[in-house]
Length: 462
Ligand SMILES: [Zn+2]
Image 1: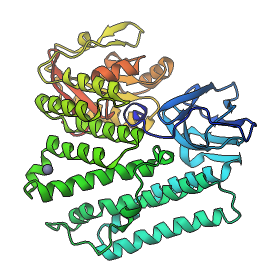
Image 2: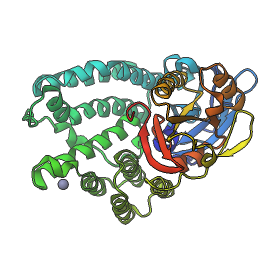
Image 3: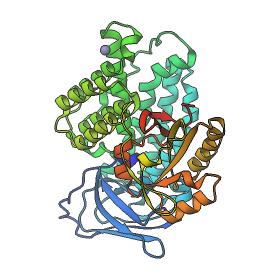
Image 4: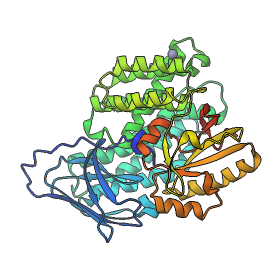
């Protein structure tokens, strides 16, 4: 659910196309069973180009006078999925939010490539345990298996296109969604194989193992927001950085584990490999967010990183987001006062986060949940019940995000949770900027309103 903020990657460049050849409008419509939001939003790249409200039968419909053929995505909070659109398409979807991707079906003009991309996506999810098991194999056997999966996928694509129903761009996207997806495993192989087998060093790879890299294209605008392509680029940059560092910076593990140093390698590779501005900005952004959110480096190192980042990518299209995140993290350092965010209690009164912190208890732990992810809510409720009984000196305070008020009340009242310890925020954007609510299992520990650890984890810290 936090994807739109942190990993809002996805989909192509918009703007109105020439539309000259074909004046017929493009329709994209559908029905959503068990809606989780009132709207469907259509994105081109990271830009929302249109949004429509569901009618009283939970139907929506976009009519687009002129569009550029390519990959878009639509969002029905908290989920999002691709849709490939060409001028004159007339696509209808049906989906049930309880089984989002598994229930989604496209029909109408333009359905072929869309159902193909969706099938690939589902197949890739289903295959992943099998692929993880392949990392055990030696290089040649691993390579053979992956190559045969690529060939199977490409054969499916050729079969689909026997009668030439796909446009050139559709064929290219279909192909890339297979090839880049599987190439990711080849990038990961040396490391995963080493870990799985317990070998000390990465083993020697078969000749030509990396041959697929010769046909890489770092500058294909049509692919910028295709997930396998983007994920491939992230892995590739990580792999090159690791190799460059172990071979060039003293050949020992300690230097690679220095995250500030290692992430500098990544920034350098992105700079030298990628020219296409949007992909470049997105990859830089990925590195920045990954480093700032996941490494929890010292304040001094964070500062050094952000200075370098401004140097290499000063005109990044995501700069405001990255600066906000950096400031949020600086404000959450140990010994600082917890930010004063407004929340609402069960009676609808506005209260400040600083007033909620329980000064009768030794420490206060703030944790987060959302009504749109029931399993997460059930798990975290059980976890908190257990932690509360094991740690009677701590107060555990739940903060709900992205759930409407009535729904939230019903969930809290039907749970085992102490309603006096439950609060919600109407304004997820402000809350997450101030408290950096990512991942959702993070928790913030305070003592007398001073931060002890703002990046603890409800499942791991205690
Ligand atoms: Zn290095």
